[in-house]
Length: 562
Image (cartoon, rainbow, N blue to C red; front, side, top):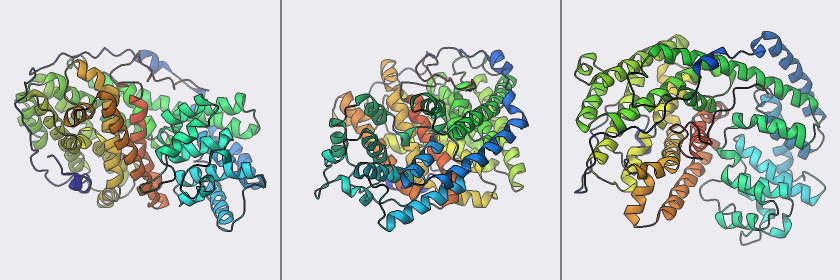
């Protein structure tokens, strides 16, 4: 179904209701060939090598060492005297992926800082350092879900809301302002595009600003930056907290050992599935799928969900290729009906490749559902898992129909369908089910509570995918992307269309920031993994097609210990 703009957000997680038939837009444009030729290259990973990886850090003694180091580092909080130093300590801990060790200490420290702020106490006696601390505090409070009004930053601006550049000559302060701007919300006027350009115009360190502008912290997956931050604090900035750095390196290696074990498990699953040889047209991308899953939930305790997500993502790629490359319109219509009925008898009427896809999907969903049921000790999640797959496949059928009939939809039509074909709702549903221990009915309530964030996360996934793959898709005459839809609808150039798509992404992030700030602490802990789906979309598509092109810049390099 193509959802209206106003209703899409409301209905996105109504997975147990039967979705009405999607409306198929037709035009008199020239139709495209029934089938396309796959241009994806074979997998380049050596699975035998990956299965041979071992790590000493899986041993229990290293976890004991980490706990001892944690106790030593926790004393740093009480020994840190100034608010500025305390803010910087929290920032280091976050960047080194150690926040899970110090949740209580961080919460207490931030609440203490908020109290000082509300009572009018300055962060520092130095005006320049006080401005830096204000900008850093604003960013940290918003990242952690605390209320932080844009009025905190009023000292940076004049009465007309214009940045007073002579007040912020310090490079650290400017960078914090820039990073904080990516946590802005709808209706906030201080951290706008004009003021961002003012920040850039007075910077003497263009490289630092370009990096923050292109890859801001708010859009990055923290786990994949940990090695960089360990190196920076060890070599570039001087090791002024040796215990913290030692814990960071040890924790990194312990978690990497867990990831290696998880990766080997999913590689064995993939090999046992034995479908690559039969599905010659599709992408064999189990390592990239695992990379995406780790970005969503890197914490060691989420191993089961990481493996579920890896399997789901690989199946998404396969089924997407069935609709995009393998099947004729008649084939994919039959395949969609078979998925809707989830009926083995119906599947037997399909081409052999589609039968193989369905059996792989059915077996995997049965397996995941059984594991979820064991975890929750309640009723089966299978009917709900099936329904999100039905919704996904129906959205792919709409795109396949558009392509075969030569139709280029309006951008609104495209996004109504694209938020489902992005796989965002499908992934989010598995994330929420995988992270909660609630019974099914309460888990469904959580899905409803998070529907706004799921909606905007899905839009970001769709548009990041389009930004990274549209050039190649235009070259081979693929289904229209959001960029092409807007180019045709408004009769504008590709550059202008890309700017417009980027503005939609920015607007969706502002809405995510707002809704995240309204949630309880427990819900923020859960929904941050849904938001990580959007961050991983930026990671996978910032240099092109991170799934399709294995030898590009989006290369998985995280399997080696520090």
